[in-house]
Image 1: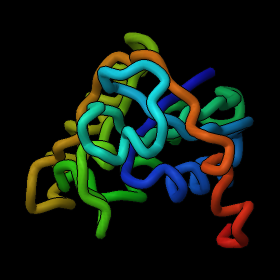
Image 2: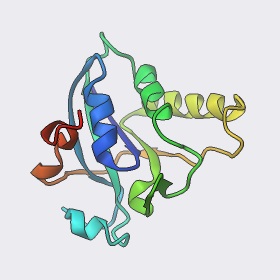
Image 3: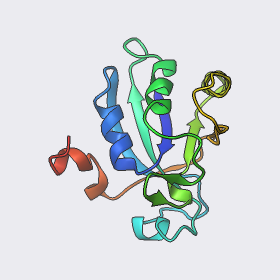
Length: 151
């Protein structure tokens, strides 16, 4: 099964999911913009509308979509609009790109529960939208932390 998340710089997000039991593979790329086959340089202009995202292939017998949502929510600030830490721009937005109605319902339910939990003083700004075409990022971005000894 496939899940797609954007939660800031895709290098860190990919590394988190890649190390999660039940995740079979990950790839980083660009999603949700208005330019086909964008490059990293184009996405960084903040004009293409793409988010840096991670596409996760997972085994639902080993990990549930709800558990993937927990990894997502617990590893970034979902109340920060178009920013994660020092990274600023629309490409760093918090987004869940859903692949079917079941994912949409689960994502909305988890967002509502987290919003009402009192964990954050501000509202969650994470968008939950149908997954458009995903464009795989350049090879040097794939498994970046692992390739550079940060993993």
